[in-house]
Image (cartoon, rainbow, N blue to C red):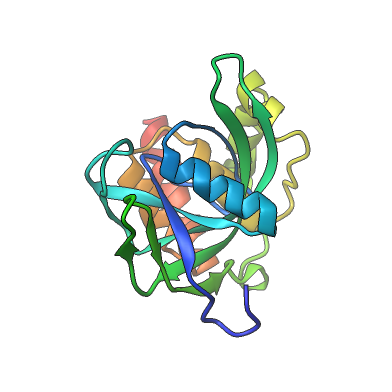
Length: 200
């Protein structure tokens, strides 16, 4: 990533999943275009951008994608028993896609602008946000969540909002809307409304 907001060309990895900064996601890689991408990223210590598919499929397709995604780094990899390559990625920061081009093998690449993370100082968690913290604490007891996130900072507004946005049982489009909400106070309000609806 460069020092200014505009980066070099990066590859995009379209998924039927929304990943937030700090989020951890395991992937099984089998398409040649993505095997080549992962090999290049690991060799050059680079990341790529995970974006939600708006139309199309993950496999054997060049789908349409949303314009805001998450720049990720590869934090682990392994050869799986089924012969596929397994990697684990972690979200770093929100980014906005400025251009997209499909290479001959279907890999999407283009320019991005860093959006960074929400301004945490704008809304410190307090007693008004007990519903958010308690909901995340309950979700974190699930073995799946506990294995993926062993040390959640429940005092961080960004962390609480990002993990709730990932873990709550809401449609991907709702998660994408939360990803695109860079005002932490608005993100908190939206999550409180979602939790209220789920409770009812």
